[in-house]
Image (tube, rainbow, N blue to C red; front, side, top):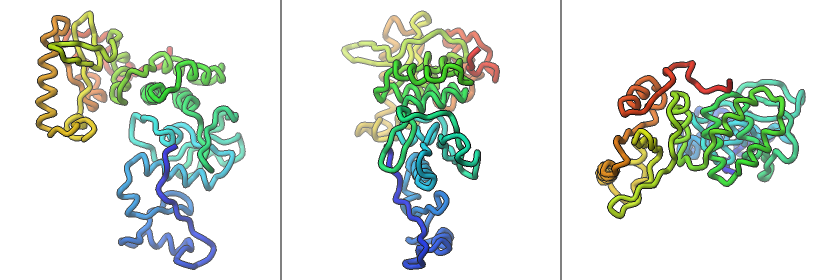
Length: 321
């Protein structure tokens, strides 16, 4: 599981400034000894916190809560996804999500969301003193909330990690009468390990919401001796849709030693080469922000020759019938 930043807690003694009041004062005192409060009686060094990324910060808050709650509380939903290193659609939430036995804890407290769905030993993964729902159980928990977009992103990530479709089906089978089961079934139908990123997973759901034909994922073209794999291929319409973004031209893992300018030129040449294929009529580039604006996106896709059978709007958001 993902590891947190070092967490410091106050002690009953006043030695070394470890009393609760002393540590709280350090949260308001700029400098190398400043602390950030991450949960009840839980603090991390501000220098560590400021240098950490969003997932590590959230994982730290999850650990801070779980270690205070103790057994048998287990991280679940978004919190378990963070601990397992799975992809998440939106930014990490402020609240920590935990599954607990019914009536053992209060239903809600600030910064903490409690879930009481039954949780057996087979549905729990342990890392030291911390427990979380297993990867497959985490996918099902999120799918049962009715959020198809987030659940498909999560399910695709789980499949890429080696969880099988059969394991996801088995996890859902444990809840034959659960509210939201029809939506969860839809999520498992849409899940596909070939989606290479959260943006591609999100795009597939949006395409389904707009009524587009089913695309071919990761279609390979060999042109002038060069192998090109595209994100989405609509063969009947001859349209390629590529998920684009600034990360492709700014992050080292995509640049692979190239300058941003060289990466941009390489991408233009790649697109020009794609258009030499007799099977490719148009290439449409879609950014993350486009997926949140379905009406202009549908207009662009229609202009490229793709049929969008569903009018964009709130009614187009996928849900089980």
